[in-house]
Image 1 (cartoon, rainbow, N blue to C red):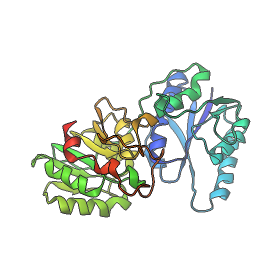
Image 2: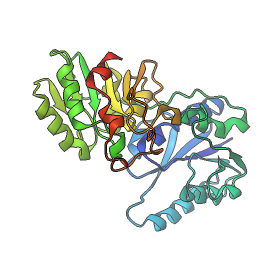
Image 3: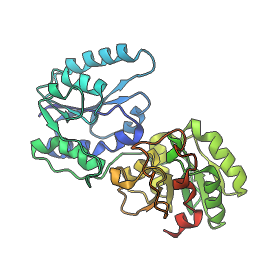
Length: 321
């Protein structure tokens, strides 16, 4: 096996949960060239990666399908021995099916799976974590990998105030996001000598500014948009605890085995996307709701209008774990 390509062009968390494939393949074929395809913005996850050679970037915004065709040309030029598709969507299936690779593998639910040499049955809520599902894609090679995600962040370029905790209050999906006032309450319950770092992307900065202001604490620092993804992972690694939603920061914690408390609102851990850190806690509402879970990913608003799955989780519940 000389050249292997992994395709995962979904969100940040999905890319992180594909990294056990990199680890397993490198262990099995240490001399092989390993490449990856990600969506634009996620390539920074692999800066300085020790054995990933090339990261292809698909720009979905500026000429989505033109860029997809250009990407296919670049992939075919490499003449891969194996292409592994971690997704169930048509674009990634198109890249895989027409890659010209000697062997291809992906999930059976992909519309282009008829073009794959090997397919794997994809099931949600069957007891498997997403990392384990992804590792099934190389089971035909008789490789058994470790489902622990792994990234390689560089040390922080600034000195942190210890002891500290990190809070990641935002999420792409509203119904995955514990409400703003709950994060304020959580900060107010933390010991006075604990430094709080509010983390997230540039789009999360205003939310975290409001939380910091309402919390009324001096030792709260908003670093949203000021750190790269890998820098955020490095910061989380040495935190006393990281408080996160069911979202990308949870998977960043898993990638560096950072302690994490994951707050689940509309989604449930049984979907298979939970934290894998050795110190991992999950907090959910203690009230049984017929409407939960309401979807695999989440919604822009609570379909029922009450958002009880989130409002039913108190700051005391989160800290008592």
